[in-house]
Image (cartoon, rainbow, N blue to C red):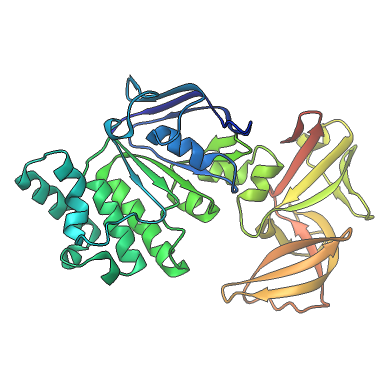
Length: 361
């Protein structure tokens, strides 16, 4: 395994589009780093520059101690797993996994050892004689993983490898990828647009938008302390509730509503002015207005109820905007009911607004 260093990395296309804008990252040996963000944010372009499939416009990429900007993809000691599997349809599973090693002139005995160990690790030994058309989507993805594993690279690169699988298989493959990383102890850079994959797989998440890193931290740190409103809205499902308004002395006044939320002494010390109050759906609860330790919000009429079996999502309107509260499954709520909502201790996020944009207070 090896470290990966990205220093002031840029990618500009001839059309003038600036896809990646000066990102810098230090990825430790053995780390599972996830690049996540919406379509077009620059995450796949960054991965492809690390792989050598895109030229670097400006900046440096180092794998270990070696500068690899001008190094061919095949000489970077990396292995890449693509979204579309990229298997040879006329070759068996065994031959697909062994193909790259044969092209390198590796001895047959070593090839058989590596293929056998990878097949055992991925539980695909019974499939070695089959061809890709005889495999399910999940089995094909395991073969693509096996083809990368046999190379024993310093760095694994994954470009949305689970996006073609159904929901059940994605959950299963997430667990298998986590186990695989633990057993191989190899540096991984993983690209996804799925924030659940990012939260469950990554040692560290790098959230990108418009070619810029918005926040890089552990999954729980990003969830609990999002750097700005974009991060808060992207991580978490359902998304965080946002209430536009103003800080006025010791209260937050919600625009278009008589509701005023009392602020903690720490937040009440902020200067008065426009801000956005954020509360995750699970940090709203149905309690009496005077419940100790809670910050009362408002009594709201329920608009729509979603029953998922293990929880209830109740939508409500406040100041003309849709919001949602996550309730235990045994809480009975129906459209038209009025719920007295309060904010759990520590569940309030306040984003102040200035010329540079919004940021967590």
